[in-house]
Length: 213
Image 1 (spheres, rainbow, N blue to C red):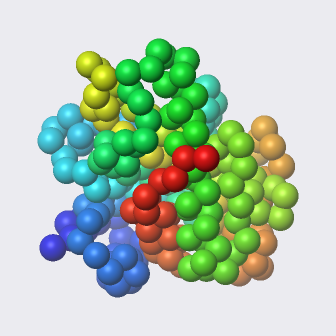
Image 2: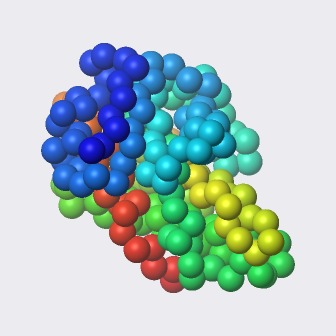
């Protein structure tokens, strides 16, 4: 069975999420507040958590984007990290030198972003698009982003973490100073969206084979 653990009430509708996912691949943990879901899942992985482990937080205080930039994570958004099986990056030659490997992993990151954007468009009929380097855009404004972290040793991928942050029901005007013009799904639609539907779209995108282009 899905191990759907809730450490906070009224954040994500667990029952509805389980129905939306319609599979047994995910081990989902909900938190009221964490520093970073990426660090939570990294620690869970170190303790032997299985692939498919996911941490979703109502808020984060130390969420990070590219190059260590602060990622604002107020209530109402989807802030999650998933522990993915290394087989998802089998197209990447891990014997390459470090610059080439970084380039290949970047290509994988944006390919994953495209898949997640496609699932949001398909499941929610919201025209989200992926854009370089790792952004999700809606109405020409940034609605979210994806960041992947890995650990490679002896030409083997030991760890593959995918973090996703999307402004859903939070207001973009409450984000304060941001690098790019921002928007939330609620801003765009004029109404709130059940968070479990966005989570389901994200995780569905992560289950599809990633095609590098």
